[in-house]
Image (cartoon, rainbow, N blue to C red; front, side, top):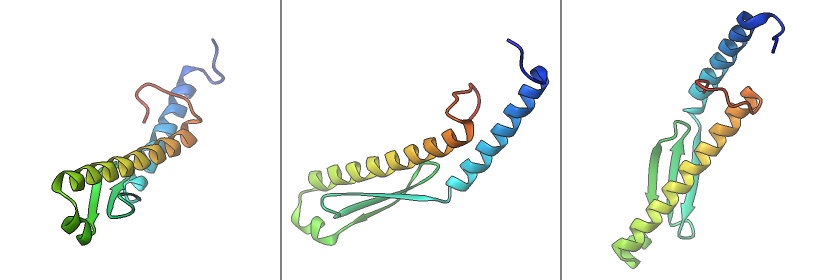
Length: 106
């Protein structure tokens, strides 16, 4: 298989794509993704790293439900927020790479 410009050009292009991916990942660290559970009584926020950044729990929920239910809702909200963050980051990186899965890139 011959590449236009040879292997050197291919490596330069891969380097440019890697720099774009790295730059976008840095930008995504500042974005937040929110999800809730229990009809909005538990809300989780994640950033684009993705890491969990914040959990909010409605006071009424703490008074009306047992600890196990509250814990389950926290886990559900956190997982949903982290999933949203991961999916968004993956979609943004795919825009840069054109959907190519390049080992070591991203």
